[in-house]
Length: 404
Image 1 (spheres, rainbow, N blue to C red):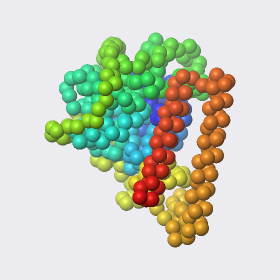
Image 2 (image 1 turned 45 degrees about the horizontal axis):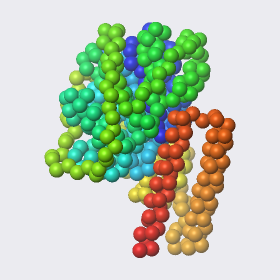
Image 3 (image 1 turned 45 degrees about the vertical axis):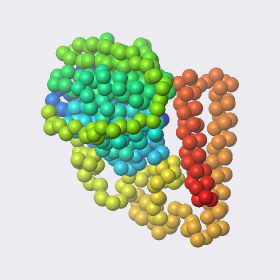
Image 4 (image 1 turned 90 degrees about the vertical axis):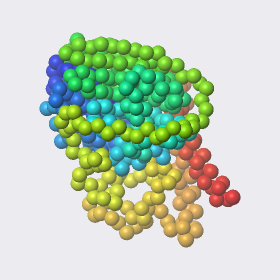
């Protein structure tokens, strides 16, 4: 799962808005630690940055601190938990938000596209990254009629897990689109009276925790009306000249899903010239300018066991990176020629998996018996377990294929 949040509207108190969104970003880290990013717009600028850092570190970066000075009236933030096999976070273009070439559209997503659909859709739509979430953006921007494009997107991806937010800067007008299905949650907080803004976030507990830990917001906001976005509805907020307009459109997934096959021409990524100043330090490859090519070292923030983030095709380096001493000479895993050590390592990893499964089962049963888990969190738990089962099934398939 990932965490998404943001707001639309000009703030009546920019400092409180900045403190609140910063705390909300930090608390959203509980839904994803692999990467963080934001996209925002004000009257004259588009502000954009992302890095493979957890949000509690990301908010210490100058790129985030400068956000208060820019005072955006539309902002999207994302805390990523990378899905196995869908774009390693150490390659920054795989992280959220995803943007149009002129940066006037930004998109964030919590969920996962069903793999067969994603593979088929890549034959129709050109993508820049290896992350499945980018596909939502490419479908959205491929048609001038955004309602039609969203309905097309829903019909194609109705069986996928989705909570999506899309922001648009159109001259002086701001648009914010929301849609979700029953597999992902999305909530709104109406702060138009207090701050002149509408906030959105993945779950109400993250919002309440953010308000509680933000001293300025806690005393300023008091009680806030929260709304759960209904599933299978597209909501659109338009903000212009300090006025909000809301529209919504019902969509229904047909349930008649078949493998997608496209015979037409590939829909290329639209190339558009910037229409305003774009404030970012990322280069054309969505990368940091000081990153050294052909090395993963600057991005390795913590030891990560093979397979947890990078998928079955990633081969871990034989040397480990240490921030103080650089590359070490020790190997991450025993050499395969040492049969005894290799078998012992496999046994240790399998034992660790069994232990974690036992802890998960016990902890989940306690939450259910104590009635202390929300319906949304229960769905997230089932989806996470289903994803883990699929990953283990892939490992088993590798063994089966080798046995022939």
